[in-house]
Structures are given as structure tokens and as C-alpha cells.
Image (cartoon, rainbow, N blue to C red; front, side, top):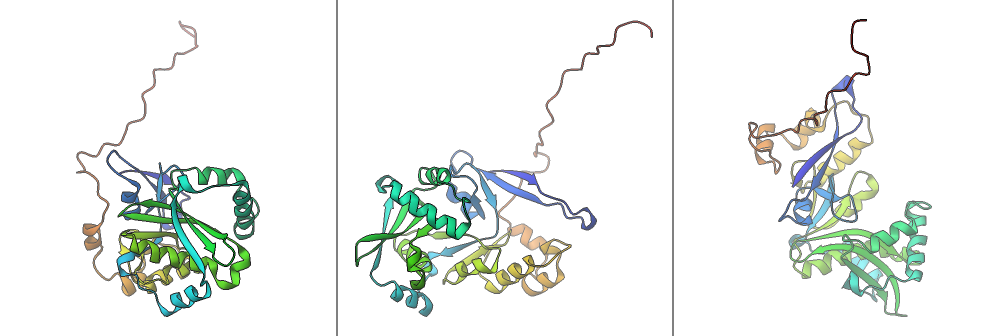
Length: 290
């Protein structure tokens, strides 16, 4: 993959110069390669990815906890079917229901009908996990999933009937997706970013890992530390924090660098493009002496 670094606001007084890191696939690569290196899609067309703190489940390590089983019991009678997007009928009624859900959960018109149409007709929406209440045959939930067989799945958007909120339908859908995809031979299910306390629920499953910028970590105490740190003002990079290093990363930084999945070519081979040359500007000043 190729990387681009997009500048963010600098804190010159503390020598903090942030960049958003974008990845672009090269021939022979697939989106799974970006997911495995800590990137998530930043477009519905899977043509750009961004590096972030995200959570995934190593599905071979997943086994339902007592809490997972309790949630499953609360939604007894709701079944799930994973279907290709081509078999999913995106009706006007479903569009309206998804829009209603998004307005309540995300904010009015954060997800517009135009964005919904783009989402459900995009490369990212390769499959749908559809939930049906067997009591009356109604579809009560839909998860948009990107899936590469035998490698990767990405749990993207979930929409559900909010009258099922007290039955914890939302977390049931995620739990069911994990259990279902484990049986299908997928290696990892990616659940999105985790920067707030409200997102920590994604890490409740056995096999949870998060990307910390240079490795996939299974230390959930570290994740909670980072989420708590995000709520406070900071004046240094994470790896410059003696507190963080002392608690979680006591090895020399050179060892982490040696294990990093990111590397450039040899410095002598590294080519930074030169600015495009410009033709000399012609003067409008008349010739001769002034």
C-alpha cells in the first residue's frame, strides 16, 4: 500500500505536529491488507483508508461469556441471515426506517437519504446480516457488512427497530455477527473505532484486540487508559509519556520500531517528489533603460 500524510493542527509550543495517515491499495492488494495494518475505510468505494485506534475480534478466540449468553436469551426467537447485497431488497420502506433510526441515534440528517443510497449501493456493503423476529416474520434489524471470505469482515452500520431497545437488540446483533462469522471461517471481525467510553462495549468480547498505532494489543487496561487520556489535555505524544510507558510499554522504543509493520525503502531509495517545474514568468516590463 501507499501512504499519504495529511497535516492536522500543530501544537508548536510542545513540538506536536500531527498527521492523518491515509492508505491506498496497490495492485495485488485487497482491503483486508489495510484492515490488518490498522486502517479503516474512509470512503464507501474502498479507495482510501485511515489509520486509527480500532477494535477487532480474533474470531478463533471468541467464546460467549455469561453476559453474552444473557443477551442472546433476551432476544430468543430473533434469527439472523447473512446474504449478499445483490439478494437484499432495499425498499423505500426500509430506507425510511433506516433514516428514522439514524436521525434518532446519530442526529437529524447526519445520515441523509442520499448517503443511505450511496451506502447500500457501495463496494463496502458487500453483505447484509438481516434479523427477523420469528414471532411475526418482521425484519427488525440490518447490519451492513464488508466481507472477504476466509479473511476479514467489517461490521459497519447497524440499523434496528428501536422498540426492541429494552431487549438489547443492538448488542445482540453484534454478538450474533461475531458468533456467526466465527463459524464461517473468517479470521477477524472489525468493529470500528474506540475513542470514548461509550465505544468500550465493543471490547467486551473474548478475542478483542485494539490497534494502538504500532501493534494489535489485547490489554484492555491499556485501552481504557487511552480512552481516559483522550478526555484530558495533553502536551506530549503518547510514546513520550513516562506514565504510559511505565505501565504498558517498558521495552526500548527501538524494539517496537524493529517489530513495526510499517517500513520505508532504504533511505537512499526514498524519493520525495519535486514540485512541478514552472516556465520562467515573462516580464511585462518594456525593454530598454529606465
